[in-house]
Image (cartoon, rainbow, N blue to C red; front, side, top):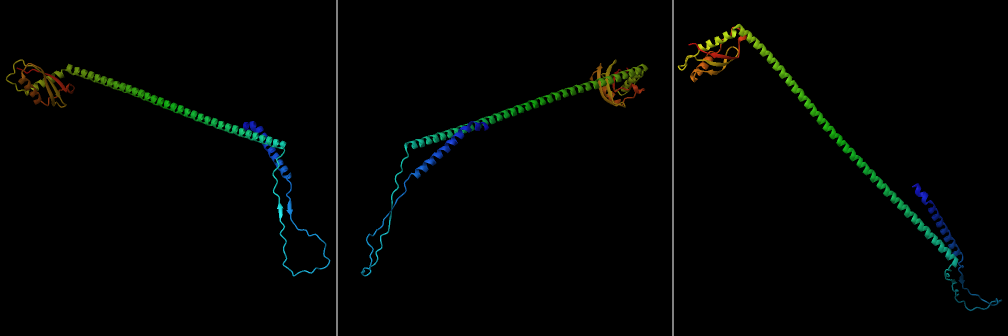
Length: 296
């Protein structure tokens, strides 16, 4: 704005000076024109009586009514037509009018340039504001995209961390299961070894053979020999017993007897329940393998 006034101050000052000069010239011309007009002459009409003054009274007839003189009227001459100023005065007036018109034109040009400059400045300001808004929108879009990218990365990282945690947890659980299974197998192995060792000790002591013989005798006492049973009968029995000797299940393996013989042997085992207990409790087994070979 300061540059605008610096640029147009001199033309504005010149325009104002021309306007003042034009006003002064017009005022001077008007003053001269009014002073050059002649004064208006007034016409006065009257009556003049000439003759000597009477020295003695003259008999007068009977008085008659007095006649009033006619009223005096003033004759006003019409104003004379305006006298045109001399040629040089018209030239001065024309020059002053031309200067005034030029000054007015310059003033209008200055105002137009100022309006154009204002419009241009407004357009620049508008363009700058739009540019700022566009840049701000672009920054906002970039920030939003960056935030979305970071959020996606965070979500992906959390997902990967969760998957890694699950994998490690599964591996740990699998390791724990394997460790428990190894411990169980080792415990079973230890128990089996202990049982085998105990069974070996019992077998070496002859308690198992004594126990199996006792079982065969018990079953044979409850066996009703069918007519189809022949000499040299031998059947392998798989007996499952509960603690206390109660028979739970009986299965026959290899047997040289017919179906009636096989059924009679199974019935004899069930009739022998509860089975007798061994002399040494260590000889008790829940699953027994008995070779049934009755005496002739």
